[in-house]
Amino acid sequence: MACRRRARNVGIPFQGRTGPNNAITDVSGLEVGYATLIDGHGSLEVGSGPIRTGVTAIWPRGRESDKGSFASGQTLHGNGEMTGSLYVDDQGWLLPGPVMITNTLSVGTVHEAVIRWQTERDRRLTSLPVVAETWDDYLNDIRGLHVRAEHVFAALDSARSGPIAEGNVGGGTGMICHGYKGGTGPSSRVVPDGYTVGVLVQANYGVGPALTIAGVPVGRELGCTTRPCGGEHESAPAGESSIIVVVATDAAILRSELRQVAKRVSFGVGRVDGIGDEGSGEIFLAFSTGLDVDGDGPRYPMAALLEDLDPLYEETIQATEEAIVNALVAAEPMVGIDGRRVQALPLDRVRDILEQFGRIAPPPDTDSRVQREPTRGA
Image 1 (cartoon, rainbow, N blue to C red):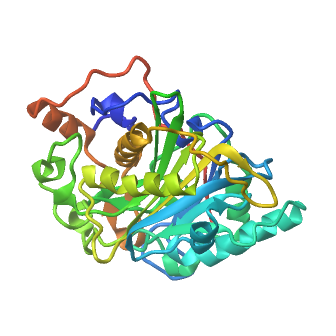
Image 2 (cartoon, rainbow, N blue to C red):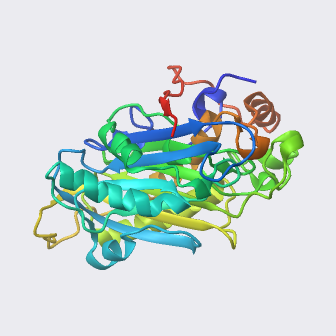
């Protein structure tokens, strides 16, 4: 199998011009941090492991900022959770503080830990932290509740700008996407007007046969079934889970425009052939750092600041599609509870399929390998 790289290095073609890191951190000031928990092997013992999970922290304006951001959310299918979303929808902005992503049963721990982190550092309190989730019980001892405050603190404190890790990291550590190992994926686009839009996904959804890459029915050609692709240890269906998508932009737009941006994420998910399964949660959040929101709340400009939003919509769709594929390409095979194995997307075979369909692209000028992130035992 080819070395785990990024989608463009495999020859997968995408539309649009990326930012320098092809990541959500191309939005100036934004920082991302992870805590990745991988520990134990063998049979499941609830409370002991094996553990395959983690936490992702996104600081819209960096750890040191006390500014909020105009924001809005959208749901394609609501079998999932994003705390604080009612406040965002009603007020139209994110309170100062991070956006967190983890596994389903750790939402409460992460929510409390964000408040503790701010209190212990005498920072302005985010009374309604935003915490989103996807379900990772195929590989992880999810009922063991292994994410603790110390892991949340580690994700918050390690956040940085620039290139970031992807694949089996943070909240995406134990996730499965279209039957293959999924997880965390970033991408970005530079809008012709000069604005940047960045996307980060936690991809844990979709069935194998439906997987579509660059318009090619890759899942069908690979012969993947509806189960996680793991050989002799296959034992549970995939597809009925979730994807969380966070969109950031430095375009100076308000919550009404951001709601429209968040809606366009669905088209990006659809390009990879996600359909919003009945058991799945597709929950999206879009925010802008282009206008400051101070501690007293937003002050709305009297006129629209962008005349044409269509380029921003298009770039959001493109970046969402590539972020999902980046998660698949970067993710490595993983063995979890009870010896369950989920294979990585076979990159050599994917490249061959794309060549057969005439959809291969020349490699980029730079060899952007996946950033590596340290893992922690529980």
